[in-house]
Amino acid sequence: MPKRCKNSEEVANDTGEDRISALHDAILQVVLSFLPSDETVQTCVLSRRWRHLWKSTPALRIVHSDLRYWNVKELNVFVNYLLLLRDRVPLDECEISYRGRCSDEEYADKVRFSGMWIHYALSLCRAQVLKVNVGIPLMRGNSALVSQFLRRLELNGVILWEHAIDFSGCPKLEDLNLHYCAINGHKISAQSVRRLSITQCAINLDSDSRIRISAPCLVFLQLDGVRGGVPFLESMPSLVTAYIRLCGGGNGCVLLQGLSGATSLELITTARDFIFRKDLKRCPTFSMLKTLLLNEWCVAADFGALACFLQHTPVLEKLVLQLRLDVIWKFVTKTYESCNSTVQFLVLKHLKVVEIRCHKEDEQVRQIVKILSTFGVSSDRIDVQVIQHTYFSEFSPSK
Image 1 (cartoon, one colour):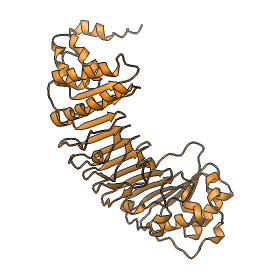
Image 2 (spheres, helix red, strand yellow):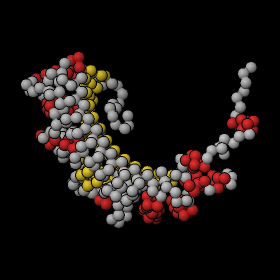
Image 3 (cartoon, rainbow, N blue to C red):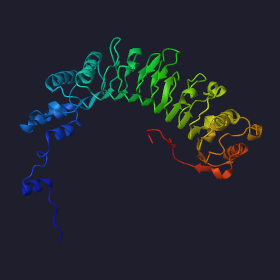
Image 4 (cartoon, rainbow, N blue to C red):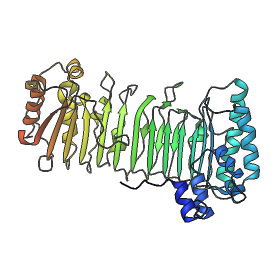
């Protein structure tokens, strides 16, 4: 008969060991740092040893939601006492999150106290990571974020005015994520940032001005579902990977010049109009680009956009066309015979594979294949993939 496995309590009784108590204080504090701060404080009743451990945890997590047992006002009182009583040790991370509805009075308290808590985390505790999920202006007045230690900043549902999108006061900031934010201003200045993600944000909705992005050290860029004016990208000589998904409002756009140094580029639009027409009139040369993913917009206007791209990507190795054929043929009014067959791709010696992803292979796909062949792409390099599920990104973070 097999032996019964002993539970953890029986093991502790047999060996006389308390494995939790055997851990060093620093390890216990790291474990506690993953909990919301109010739960961390509650561990003080466990024993004398635990009485003060919460004071020196390397993370501060201020979390409110409708599911928790207190309202905004009670949370604010608790946090203010917490900051008075905890040791002023450096913070690896600070998270401030309000996830519930609130009254006008509670909103005013959120604005007042959140700014104070951010100042505490950055200025007094040298936080390296700051996460803010609060529907308020990030900074009050004309002040900007200033920290010599901040490395990562995540803002969700935050209102950003001109002064708040100047990150020049954070010289070590490398990772900047803006999600569902309302961004208002002329320029996002992020001189040290290497990874920038702007997703589902509203940019200058109350004006026609386009915002500029100045991030010369950028290695990774994601612009996904941005509403309002499409940002103007200043020079990004270090850019490696870019994922761009536009939903319209480009006004002809002028975006490609800032992406011309990338080695991997995903360029998608769900707009019905030809959003990159200004870009293609003066299309830059993508001298480093090796992987390119485009959706159905590139075969609109008699396949001119696709031809233009291929003439300006001299070292391209992989091309992916992600196509919804029901959308394509609302754009394309001419057949492949009208294309200029004298135009030659400049990438033939490097282009190894072309993938065409579609929901079904029919005459329309065969016409696209024939178009590619007129530009020197042999059939053995073309892989038609019939995919029934939702398309996914080649190199976006969500993959």
